[in-house]
Amino acid sequence: MLNQKDILSTIEMIDQQHLDIRTITMGISLLSCCDPDAARACEKIYDKITRCAEKLVATGEDIEREFGIPIVNKRISVTPMALVAGASGTEDYVPFALALDRAARNCGVNFIGGYSALVQKGMTAADERLIRSIPEALARTELVCSSVNVGSTRAGINMDAVALMGRVIKETAAATADRDGLGCAKLVVFCNAVEDNPFMAGAFHGVGEAEKVINVGVSGPGVVYHALQSVKGAPFDVVAETVKKTAFRVTRMGQLVAQEASRRLDTPFGIVDLSLAPTPAIGDSVARILEEMGLEVCGTHGTTAALALLNDAVKKGGVMASSSVGGLSGAFIPVSEDEGMIAAAEAGVLCLDKLEAMTCVCSVGLDMIAVPGDTPAETISAIIADEAAIGMVNNKTTAVRLLPAPGKTVGDRIEMGGLLGSAPVMPVHPESSGDFIARGGRIPAPLHSLKN
Image 1 (cartoon, one colour):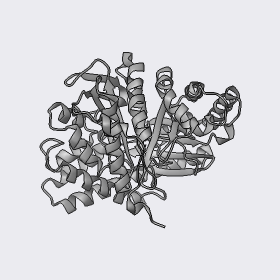
Image 2 (cartoon, helix red, strand yellow):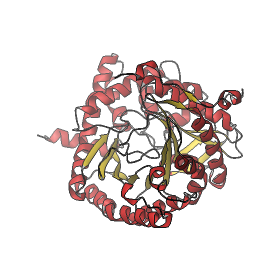
Image 3 (cartoon, helix red, strand yellow):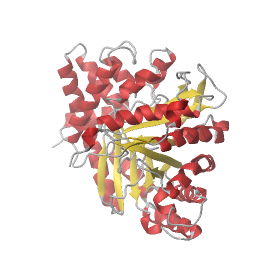
Image 4 (cartoon, one colour):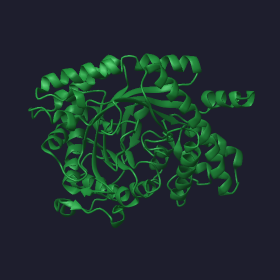
């Protein structure tokens, strides 16, 4: 039973500490839209998405008004498009992206994810066609997000796909050079991608999911930061307990919204993703949480340990608050979307190597990091390979969302606006990884993948 103190505390979290529901995401299976005729398949895709998600935005807004809980984004995820488009005879997959974009616009959502391919063990002809179409698809659409899974603990790392993705990221940056390479902000390369992730740009509706489903992503870095201010100088076990209790309260709110959205939309409830997803707003930063634990600047020695504590405590607190926790669930460290990360990078304390170390213990990976526009494709591929290896060996989801900034170099800045924020261009190692990437083939799965 809620008492007056609980109610007032929740109001304060929303009003002063940036607590929100980051997204309600409706996952929709498009397997029934497969058709040998590509034009007919695109019509089916548009019709099914607009039919299923017709009331998604209005329902989210109604819940927002009635409960007083901010719901920042309403989004859609769909079956990986390579699986759907592969049934048609066409070699041009861009019309499928245009159909997704048109449907998303009609529904009024912020983004639609699922222009995706799963190639952790090998590429079909459809997978390769989709991957090669990504630069044009993201340049010609506004709301479409794309992802490619290049590795897994079970399969190893598909290094041919890794090499290809380095080139695709460079081409995507060039195709959207007039917008500081914005297309790359909508493109994620995964290892161990999950099927129920509600967060963009990596969301897609897995083939093991129901016909349609509601997934909710909560967020509350500002709430955690505020809670830690009350335990200054306390031992780390007290810090962990404080984060756990706060994550429980935040996730409880997400569970409430998810169940209500599920009921009103007559759509099964999937999961609550309890990730701490920062924004560029002051006071809504994961970096500032780490600094509140005693670090002078995020990125200095001790940062990885602090992030490990945070990520673990968030998961432990949140899992008790929801009937189904899933997605990524932990702490995100996107540089451009976190004002504390931006400040640390501009100060020269937070570098790419330290960010890579931090990804060993956080929810995703190297996220929203601007690098010089002349960074070779092979270097980008090598960064992807490093991050995929961390995910593969540690049996966790890792990802790379790099932003090669056309015409810009270290010290410059790119601006994307909104939740995507802005980012200083960070240095990469100049030494070549070309011969390493040119080997191709597959890095085998680790021994501990053999669990049967």
